[in-house]
Image 1 (spheres, rainbow, N blue to C red):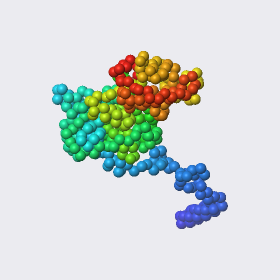
Image 2: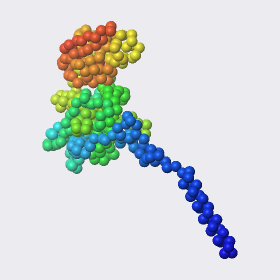
Image 3: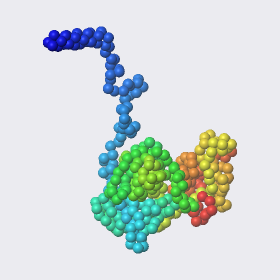
Image 4: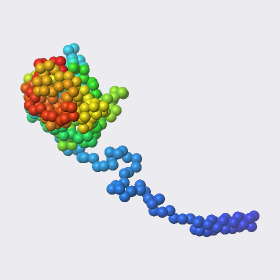
Length: 369
């Protein structure tokens, strides 16, 4: 019995020593590149991108703390009551002046008779309807207050695709909700307005916008208003990555008109237009596939009087590029009847300019844009 135990122990020791000897003879130390805890960095890389993180985390994002603090006081909640006294809608609004003017969407207030405005400091005031512009989905309310904190207007023409933005609103009745994203595109036409002379030239963003954000603010990193949030594209009824805002330059013009006249003074060029295609650009001798093709001019309208005609391709209004129908619509919509504009266009392959084209009112020429 004892002899058997001794034999087993001896066998185990010999096997252990032999295994250790084999390990020391044939084991090779792995190279440092294979054991590194960090991804391989190529010579062209300045910084290795971490694994399992969203692309937006790769680069340092702006600090939005001060911007959020600056703008949240300028966004309100709007509750809309109908004829029966029951709540029919709710949305957001943007303080436009220290004396109580509030910008929102027309579709938020269109069925209302009474308006309740809730401020971030928990004040609730009655709102008065000033005017609206269904063709841009904008409306203006007024509260009896002073010393409010309006959000300053920025220049929406300067907005760049890829620029960081904040969407501020009151979705689901949550006060002062702020979400961040980037500008995905400009001059988007998503064909949601049904008016004959609707103007759709939206700023598209991926900032989270949900029902209740309508009428809220889209601001840049400096805290300037660059748009009014108005729509999302969704199949579920919630946010799915596509949100749209009315450009601030157009908002400013509409608000000024509503304050001064109670309605919008809309100027038109008097043309029927369409997008330029690759085939059209080749046939017309255009340098690029850009511009707006005139299919018809209104008899006696501004365009015809100035000398524009069917077949011309407008590429600039007052020096600003108009590469698409929404861009041309927005550019003209910034003016009032009687204002003059300069138009750059191509005719039979030649670039020409017409100066001081006096715009007419929509009421005067009601058949063509």
